Image (cartoon, rainbow, N blue to C red; front, side):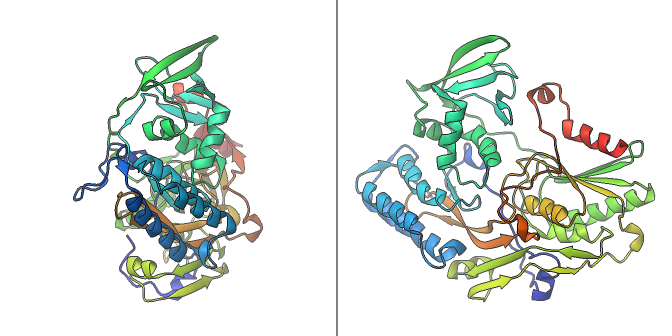
Length: 456
């Protein structure tokens, strides 16, 4: 939720367009959850009447047309054809799942990783996956699978085919997010069935184990909810021996804990005379971009190029963000004086590194882009999960009859360096990709490479 504190326009334009990026729903949101604790909606496999689908689809189309910046001038010709096609197909009863995937065609047409819908699921196959640059692997041992098994096909379809099919249904801005999100889609029963991978209530998986190829059949089962991760969202470590201080930020939460921990981090960095800082964003799906502004205030840099944005103030945006504005407002990207912190002793003038991965998404992605476009530091790791110049700050909605949740962006963001607008991710200055051997041996190859860079 947005802060209820009034944010003045001058502050918004000081360094960044201060805006929320709400995180996308990753696996824990989808898996084993009810649609709504207070109201019972149609189950995913139950049939929905044409009247109910018509009402829900009209609701979705109306929200997309009135909220998203891309539809200020109306839907594109391609989107109009998609809408007509869906309207034709929902004249006959369909299951909620089939209705979901029909509507998903319209969401997919926006190519916006923040404008999406999701379907709750509780059934799937026991197939823990990790999709690395060089292939799709089994992430950990199961009764039938071994960590490190290389997946060759699922349901008779090769990994390259699965990638293309996922690309046709996943709301995404780059291929890196497809590999990340594909790991849960390829275990979820609704997606497995939609992709035509289920046969006799099971899925055949062909894999390579060493020099031997084998095929196993995994039955559809009830999946357990993931264990809650109680890991703190912000931690840090300082290693005097390597002359490195690492600040790990797993979520962009702009709160007292962040402000206090950030100051504590720079106080210790200064007291121990550390010359190298690493900001680890590899597990960060974003949230609140104000964390960037505060972090930059601790860096000894005089001028900072910030994000620009375009905001569409629809009636829904007014209600959900508690603003009285209307129409469209633009905040051009600009270069401003860095409002450095008052205690000049805490200003950091050493070398700054940022660790990234496909999990680096939304506000975390903005964080990396600001560092890169201002030449403040070196990006190390893997490409990020979405395009830095993108749509964002999605507003939440729920279809009135089926209860399907969805979100729609109401802002458009432009990274500081306009010459990089078309680039689909923050690409590291030093690319270091995780391998399955790294996972098996519990080796942090990005951190190892970072230490090598410091030594050099």
